[in-house]
Length: 120
Image 1: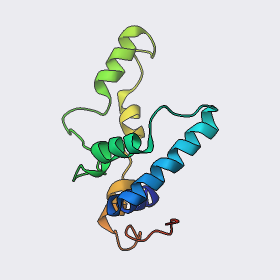
Image 2: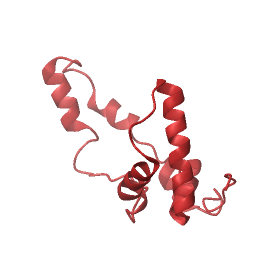
Image 3: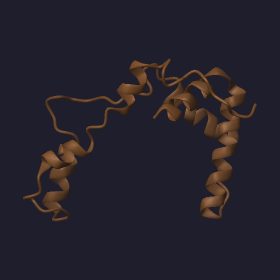
């Protein structure tokens, strides 16, 4: 989680960093799929900026305490017969009860969120 936060901070600090990360992502996607992407570095950078970097609260996990995590999805899949209706929703909720983000964000100095050793 600390590595993810470092990467986000690093990309926020410089358009050059963001474009470098987009280039790396394109190369990784091509290595994985065997196909090059139809998106340009500028398009990937724009999407990343809009969807992650320009959101002041990112990264964060929003929780609605009155609704169990994935409750609607659970019920939808149960109604389709994809999971048993008798399955325990509490098990699903506990599987998503991860506090790593909160732990890292609460002690940014300890996890060195503003320190990165990426190529520039």
